[in-house]
Amino acid sequence: MSQLCKISIEIVLNLPALAILNDWSIWGELMKSKLDKMLSSHNKLVHSEGVKIVSHTQREVEEWVQHTVMIEGCDAPFKFRRPKKFRCLKGNRVNMTYYAESEKVAGFEIEVMKVVRIKRF
Picture 1 (cartoon, rainbow, N blue to C red):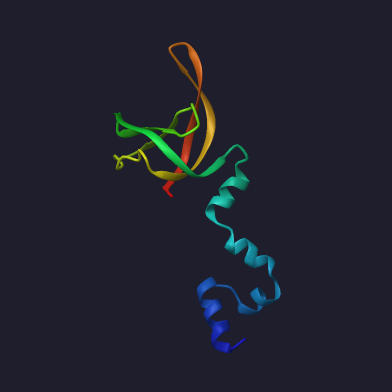
Picture 2: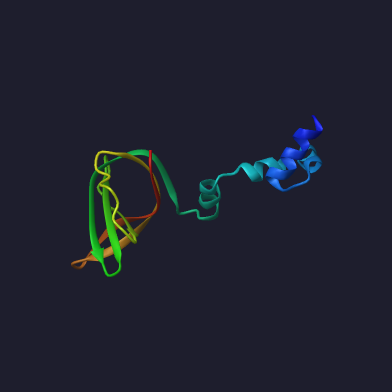
């Protein structure tokens, strides 16, 4: 490996280049995505990729906008709050990270998915 390449690795990763070359386990930790770290530290989280949004509603709740989406093939609503409105997600495919929670509505317990992260596919 050339000296220039070693210096580049050192600058980009802020680690000594020789330590990286000799210990491949460091690479595994550095290359882990935020999503992988989140999923491994919170065992109740579920990640779904490429799910199609069938319905998307937005309504203001105090200072937040409550978003509720329904996905294809699932009867439970997916809810999340954001400070402002989104473009309508209906018909789009998204990647979502969420967990199940129960909510009481009119005296009935219903299952609701709380979305932690949502991104267009």
